[in-house]
Length: 613
Image (cartoon, rainbow, N blue to C red; front, top):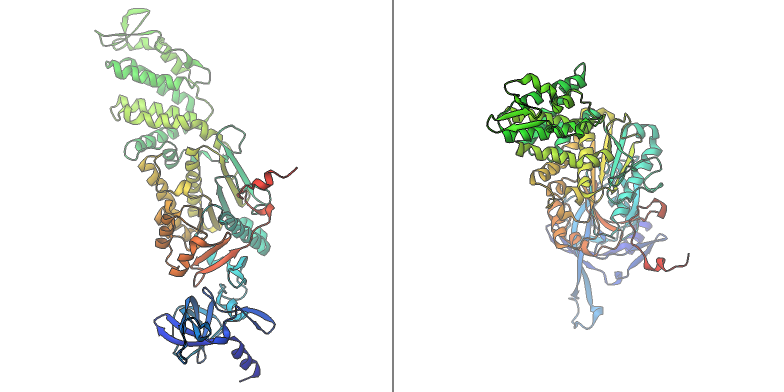
C-alpha cells in the first residue's frame, strides 16, 4: 500500500460497519473523528453529518450510503455514566444509495451489502462529484444553475434527460420557485444558442404563459424573444395571429362558447358547415341574401304566432349587423298579426294575408332588409350571423329547441369583444416569429386567462403532432394552478373536464411528438393528480400546507422519507431535485439570477420604500 493510500485511509476513515439490516446500515464512529471538517491534500472536506454521504469499502467495491440520522451509544469497553460524554460513541444510521463500479462511475441502487467490520470513510470532493454526476457520458450537453446544499459543489444538469422531459416546479410564494424556472430556461436557451444558434432557432420552440407579467423584462430568459402583452381592457395589446381555419375550428369555437357536448356542439358543427358552404360559393353575399329572403318568406307564412315572432327577433339580430345599417328599423313596423286567420298581413292592406298571397311578402321591410343585406367584414361577427341563420333553419324544421341553442350564441356574442382584442384572424404572421415566445396574461380578465392558454396550447400541439420533424416544442406554464386546477366553481363541469383532458393528453402523449411541458405552481394539491404524477423531473421548494405535502408524497415516488420531511423547512432558493435525470434525490441551492435577468416576482421591501430618491 502506498504512503498516499495509507495517509488517505488514516485521515478519511471515520469508523466501521457494526450492523446491516437490508438497506439500513449502522456505522460506529471513531472517537477522534467527530470534527465538522477534515483537511486532506490541501482541501477542506466536510465530515459526515445527517444528509451527507459516506463510503464503505468491501474488498475492491465501494458502497455509497446517505446518513439518515445519528445517535450516541455507550462505549462497551469501559464502565461509565451518561454524564461522561467522552466515553460515548456516535452511531450513524445510513441508507445505501448506490456504488462506485469498476469504471469509477456511480450507479444508483443496491447490488451488494456491506459486511460487519467493513471500514467507512468520508468521501473526497472527487467522489462526491462522481456521486452527483448526472451526465451519461463525458461531453454531453449540460447546464449549471446551482450547487449541492451541503457540500457546495457545482452540479451539471443534463439537457438530455431534463429539458426533453416534463418538469414540475413547486414551492410556496417566496421560496425561489420563479428564480428556479427562469434560471433553468435561461441557462438552457443560452447553452443551446452557444452550441448552434441557427439550429436552435429553427428546430426548438419555447412558449411561456406568464400570468403575472413576470417574464417581460428585456433581459429575462433571453433578449431574442417575442412578447405578446395581451389585454382585454383596451385594443392596445398585441394580438395573437390566428388563421381563419383555426378560428373556425369546431373545437376552438366550442371552447369559446362553452358549448355542451350533446346539443350545442352539433349545432355549432352545422353552423360552421353552413359558413363554409356559403363562403365557398361563387357569390357568398348573394347566397346569404337569397337564404335570408327565403327564411323571411317562410316565417311570414307561419301559423304559429309565438314561433314566428321569435324567429323575426332572430332575423333582427342578423340584420342589425348589416354594414349599411338597414337593420336599425323595426322589421315588424309594417306587419300585423291576425289572430282569427292565424297569420301575418300588411298593415297598409288588411285584405292581404301572406299565407294565401305570398307574392306580397316582397313589399315588407323584412324582405327588403334581407335582400340588400351585406355582412360585416369580420369573421366572428359573420359566424354569429350564420349561427342565427342556422338556428332559424333548425326551428323551422323542428330540429332543435331555441331555448337549448340560443345560450351558446349569446355566450359567443358576450366573448366577441374579448376575442377580437386577443386574436387577429386576418394576420398572416406566425405566432413563433421568434422561437422563444412570452404570452403575458397580466392584463387579461379571469375568464380569458383560462381560455387563451387552452386555445393556444391545443393549436400548437396539433401543429406539432402533424409535423414532428420541425423539432421540439417546450410549453412552460407559470402559476399553473390557474388553468390546471381540479377545483373551480366558476365554470361548468363539462368545460372543466375538457380543459383538464386537453392538458392531460399533452402531458401524457406529448413526449412522443417532441412536446415537453414545464409547470410551476405554489399549490400542487390544486393541480390535476394526473398532470402532477406524469412529470419526469421535480424541483420542490419549501411547501408547508399539509395538502400540498400529501400531493407531493403521492405523486413523487423518488423521494425518501428523510428528504420528504425536510421540505417544510427548506431555505429560500434551496430545493429537492428528483426524477429520472438523477439516480437519487438531491438537495440543490439554486443560484440567484442577477436583478436584470430575474423575473419581476421579488417581495416588496418597505425599507426600500423609505429610502430617499
